[in-house]
Length: 308
Ligand code: F6P
Image (cartoon, rainbow, N blue to C red; front, side, top):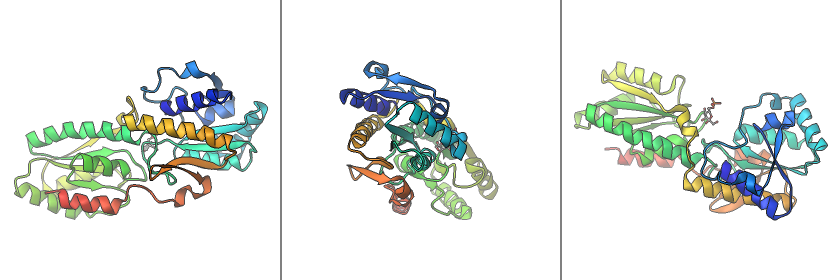
């Protein structure tokens, strides 16, 4: 996100515009908590994880009253355009605000989950992949040395993109995601067969949204069925931090520049994304309907062929 904040700020400065950054997103907007951003304010941040502005889940903004307060703040501060970086909740908030505030609102996709329509990739996804992959590679060493089954839980409440990404890149034997129903008896059978063929490590990547209880629950059931030691490992919030991957910095930069340009062109009520390498503007209302770049059926099939 910092690469994006930097790009927005410097493009705006280049275009003789004034920028303020709201702290903790919609929280800051409701409270009027913001700081001016200039070229120098965003120096030396492109390599930093997190966001210099802070982030939050703002329940108040989900209410009419919260959005009314935000609208008053925006009017009182003579804001012409609001740029919102975030995931599904942030885009819904932006859509709802656009119905009552007459300024321009442009969304920019930022979530590790990569679960938004209107863009192939969301800012943060590639960094989360690298972080989770690094852990899976390390877990593979223990799994191999101890002849064990490991269940590694990655983030993704509603989407299996992180799990599919690291599952393929890490050579996982199974990838359990919310989009694909899987029969645990079938997984148990494949574990037994693989062990029978002399396979030492067996890594099952589990998206947190796959089932209630996630990897811990699946590990318990698999241990019961197979009587092999099936060890769960929940990677959790490690995936949300760290120095951003090169592609996240490039994506954040590109989307930030185009968000400012889109605002100058008069756009509003849209999210700026990247589809097939091209910049694409999608109406907030249409975000849920757009195709997603990672096709679970396609990658699961490839994984079935490769797990031997
Ligand atoms: O929405 C993005 C996400 O990374 C999810 O994958 C994960 O469930 C969630 O955030 C964790 O958020 P929190 O720290 O608010 O529980």
